[in-house]
Length: 387
Image 1 (cartoon, helix red, strand yellow):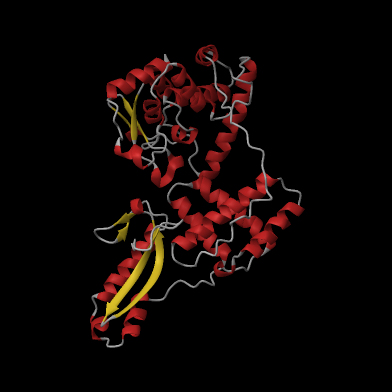
Image 2: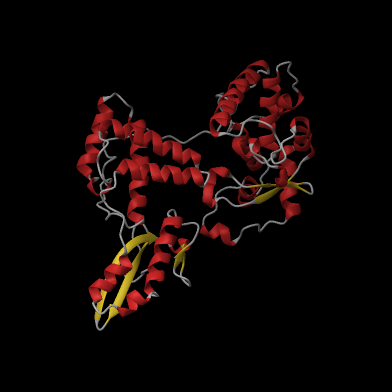
């Protein structure tokens, strides 16, 4: 990782540098942030977005450096070309590279990102399916933008497609496949969107009690309200993390969670297994040897199940005459996360402690102070909100 030229938008350049007999040649093969790089061994860390490919590429360079073929070479340029190997062709179709990135996101559990990539790529395919990575420029992107606007799409939708394409493009730059032509600079200027402060809907105490006391004749209604309560008892856990809860995540009265939403950035944190949560788990616990619940776990099955629970929640809300605060809104699967956070603030619980209970994504400073709150203090805060 070469720091002499300073850090750019994508990080520091990762270079092959060969020196011999007062000759030096350099080749940038990728980019990396400091927290993505092991400076002792000169390898990327798992947090690098292109970890596997880059690790393999550098391993091949180091392997060639130790061969007799390399040591026997007398021509400096030939030696440098041998170390470079066969670089990935810049003529690779943007659509193909984008699909590679979507598959990688699937592999690391970031399925939401993978879906968003594929949706944007599908729209790009309608406009132009042959454009290569190296040929992505401002003129091409401007044409795609105007094409989508001509279809009557709102600015927000057009921006979202461009955001996903930009993420794919930036990764190709960071992987050293293409030079950054900065084609996205200024591209969003004529796509204004109305910005307003988000108001997260939450339940008042009385409405939480309505959910706890309700008993419906319809299985789906009971299951939906119990699952959303379990989210609350797990300190506002994401719906997916509740559905995919494994038996080995429950140990000695504690629940060990890792937010799937954060992908590689996720970290394990533990919570008190509150008696109210334990009662729901016992009520629905299945026979699967790995997972707590027997609900569908395939991607398609989970999406269908999620839709069913969402629709059931709307009926639960209607039957119990629940109104969300501060302004009545739809009872989404995020409401209990907002509810836990809001009541934590009402109880004047320290913001950092609340974030730790909820497994919020940590920045570099947060990581230094990970788990700084004692278990007893965290448990008291959790109980004070639930009870």
